[in-house]
Length: 177
Ligand SMILES: *[C@@H]1O[C@H](CO)[C@@H](O)[C@H](O)[C@H]1NC(C)=O
Ligand SMILES: *[C@@H]1O[C@H](CO)[C@@H](O)[C@H](O)[C@H]1NC(C)=O
Image 1 (cartoon, rainbow, N blue to C red):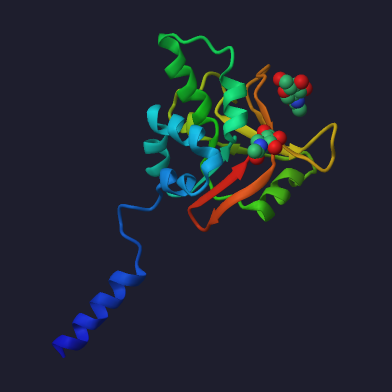
Image 2: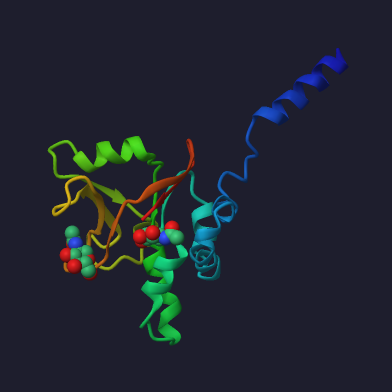
C-alpha cells in the first residue's frame, strides 16, 4: 500500500508543473543565439523577472541586428535604463498568442485588428489611456504582413511579424519582429 502511494506521488511529481516555475524567458531565448542581446536587455532592466512572474506571455523579440540598429543613437544617460525598461515592457503581451491565433487577432472581429495588453500597462507605468496596449493588425501597405503598433497616440513604435520562434502552450510564445 505504502509503495503504491509512493509510486503515485512520484508519478504526480513528474506530471504536475512546479508551482513556482512557470516561465523562464531567459532559458527560452537562450536556445536562440540571434536573440542574445534582447535577452540580456530583458535581464538587465528587470523585465525578464517581471515576465517570469506572469502566467502567460507572448514576447515580441527583435534579433541582434535589429537591437543594435534600434540602440544606435540612443543617448547613454540616467534615463536610458528606465526608458529601455518601458520599451521592453511593451514587447511583452500578457497572453499566449501563437502564429495561428496571431492571424485571427490581426483580422479582428470587424477586420481592423485587436488590442492586447502588455506588461507596460500592468506595471501601471503607462502614460495615457492607450500607451500600455499594442494593436495587432494586418499591415496597411503590405497586406500579407501582420503589424504591431503601440496604442499610444502619436507613438512612433511599430513592428512587423517575422516568424514564430518558440511556442510553448499555454504559457510562453516568442514571436520574432
Ligand atoms: C534580423 O531581423 C531582421 C528584421 O528585423 C531581418 O530583416 C534580418 O534578416 C534578421 N537577421 C538575421 C540574421 O536573422
Ligand atoms: C512604422 O514606423 C515607421 C518608422 O518609424 C514609419 O515610417 C511607418 O509609417 C510606421 N508604420 C505604421 C503602420 O505606423
